[in-house]
Amino acid sequence: MRLGVLDIGSHNAHLRIADLTAGYPPQPVATLKRPLRLGEATGSDGVVKQRAIDRLTAAVREAADFAARHGVHELVPYATAAVRDAVNRDSILAEIQAATGVLVGYMDAEREARLTFLAARHWYGWSVGPVLLADIGGGSMELAYGGGENPDLALSLPLGAGRLTRHWLPNPDRVKRKHRERLREHVESVLAKSAGELSARHLVDQATAVATSRTFHQLARLCGAPKTKAGPHVARELRLDDLPGAIELLATRTAAERALLPGVSAARARQILAGAIVAEATLAALRLTRVRVCPWALREGVLLDWLRERRGPGWRLLSVQGRSA
Image (cartoon, rainbow, N blue to C red; front, top):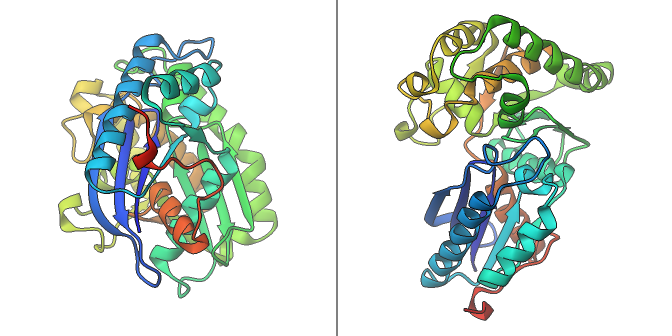
């Protein structure tokens, strides 16, 4: 079975095509990524501007055509927090369908955390024991804990790096210390209840701490982890002790200058500072000295869930062959 997963996030529309066979991990076939910058195009009123919707519509059309050319049997198109939380979400999805014939769904934040957890569990296996997962996205951060394939606890917090940059750092190129401190206080206050719940149940002490998302990957690389080209099976981790220095380094540079640092992409250079502050506060709140950085995340979780269930993962699927022109 050849499945295509189209992940619509705050930065990119990312299509991953894989062959799925029972008893084997997903076998990569092809990928396609197109920039969206939905977070930057979302106003203070929560409305995504039309120019970004046009980019999104074009990206969905291209992804569906790309999937068809690669013989995909089913396309799973879904949007995460940037669209899910938009005030004009329904009109965005309706416009995409009218223009492309593709019915894009969205999952709630808890399901996003559960599928990302599933990917991490499959990557590390059973030998690591219970897993504590953190995933910093553009619009939200997910935390999940569990000893099985599915987490026993899954939380979503409004601590996405893009969201925080827009609301707490008025000038991401020239970040004043007072703005950094206010952001840190806000992050710590949001984390306090969730971290306290995990700690009170003694879940943190029992778990292998794992992090996913491009934010964690780029911070780990900035702090000395091996390059991406070293391959997914090379161990990578992010240490709490390295994050204060990384934050200071990022805070003294413009977005263009950050993009020249090891591991930092131009697409995430504006928000990587906020992501680093969230990462440090999260590790500190959970009393973690380090986290393993997992190469699998939400897209792989969707593929694994489809294979596990031998059906769609709970929202509407589109047969590419039946897509209207």
